[in-house]
Amino acid sequence: MVAPRGSLDVAVRTDPLESFTGPARGTPRAVTLEPLLHRVAAGDPNAVQEVIDRYGGLVWSLARRFCPDKQEAEDAAQEVFIEIWNKAPRYDAALASEITFIAMIARRRLIDRGRRKQRALRADGLEDESILPAEDKALELVDVGDEAARARKALAKLRPDEQKVLRMAIYDGLSHDQIAKATTMPLGTVKTHLRRGLQRVREMLGVELEAEGEASA
Amino acid sequence: MKHRLRHLPRDERESELFELMYERAMHGLAPEAEREFERQAAQHPDLDVDCYERAAAALWLESSDGRVQSMPADLKARIASSASIPRPAAATRAAATPVATRMPNAAAARAGWFAWSGWAAAALLLALLMVRGGEPGSEATSPAELRAALVAGDPAAATLAWSATDDPAGRGVSGDIVWSDAGQAGCMRLRGLPRNDPSSSQYQLWIFDAARPDATPVDGGVFDIAVDGEVLVPVKPRLKVDRATLFAVTAEPAGGVVVSSREHIVALAKR
Image (cartoon, rainbow over all chains, first blue to last red; front, side, top):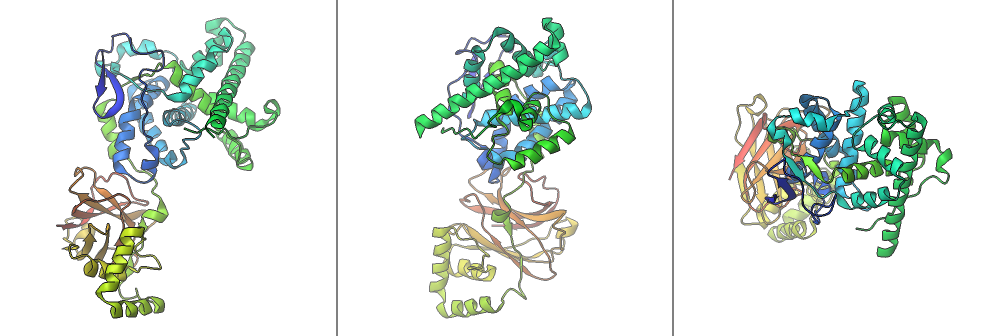
């Protein structure tokens, strides 16, 4: 069951074990969210709380994937939000939706944090969810934004092997070596697929962005 | 939403910057490589150097199905309570003007004009502030002029005395604040507030609004005390205040905060 969450444009799954039976994949709700970051940049304290409410689940999910234990994930999530406050004035709605901008900042901060700690990125997040306390299993559904929908279309145009390694690298956080072992592909092939795959997704996103920009100009 | 992708390198395969952009998006960069990335990015200001990171972020969002774990409530509360963002300096930092020296020649001339014009000029000045959103304390409007305009131009303007607090910095505080709901502006007169080192801490004004929860007072701006004696500080909040009920001055880290911990309240003025 998907229930609206107060004044926020997100939905909360009240039963975390219930399979998602909502709208099409990746588009749980067709909602238009008013950007908040320009209000944060203007010093609106209410916007700070709204950003935390709207994107807390996103940041927390990324932090849990990148960090091996809960305390470290909490520290990382706080670090990510500090970065969000700092970068808020740089948000450009013409380049990306707000959620993509937030996800980009979060990934960058978490990757940098992982590098600093010299630890491998988390590769077994889904398995570890089984040992999380009940409150950690609560899921939310968020509108993933325009870029995600375009990324899905772009991904679908890639070769299956490229799609596979991109998902393993981006979503599961696997290293090149781990992907090579898991797929039995040569390491060089994994690297080539990743590079070519991300480049093509970027190109396809760019082409669509330019096409939309021309259409709306 | 209108999109316009900025330029990419003409030949990406041979671009070192492209290589850094890709590596940054996939694995992050070591400090030395990050510095090189920043150096090269600065040489190409029109280049959209985040495009690969955005593609990776969009892929992650797509792969997530939009299903994310709920952030624990206590973590949300900690993040909110510690939120501190850089504030737009030009718009939020007010100048505290020593009363004894606040009237250089040009200002004194304006003061003479002001005295001559009387109430009508005050009302006009206040009206201009209301209509144009003028910056109190600017060259065109000194804090003293603003204060006089508020008092003379808005019969409903409140003059509230500061109360000292138990905070060591607030024990000797006195003075008052003039505030006009209609003009959305005010002027603090403060005595006895210790000087601050702007590089480490600043004073920040908070305006409690009857239309807002007490937990989220309106940010009235940061200011510094650089002199002993009495100072005037103009107040022009960036957010609308329907009816101010309480004013509080806190000591905060340099730059101010979005949400105050309220650990160092140095002055209070209640309506």
